[in-house]
Length: 82
Image 1: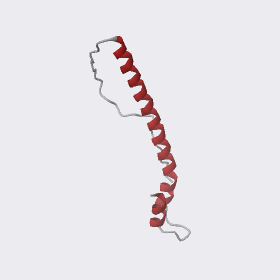
Image 2: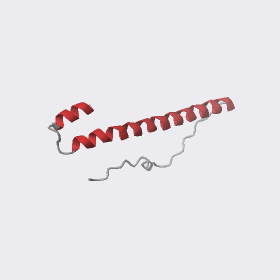
Image 3: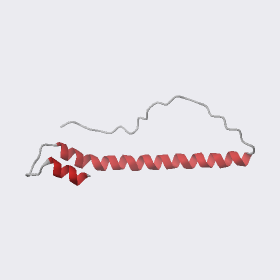
Image 4: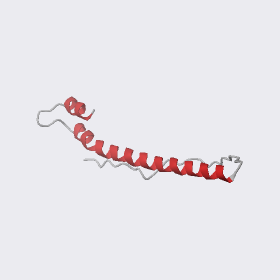
């Protein structure tokens, strides 16, 4: 049986770039900083939920990919998944 693992800790490399946003005051900077922090937190939460969903789905998908047993057809198992 093949070992199917999900490598979630290896993000794709992204090119470095610099974005300059002129701000009219310090309060605008702090507001923008807070918004960026909130987006970062949302991204981390969404990624964790996505990884959990993938792990949960991996069991029934692996079972459906095996040869049929107990008289069940593959189509029946796939219908249960989706």
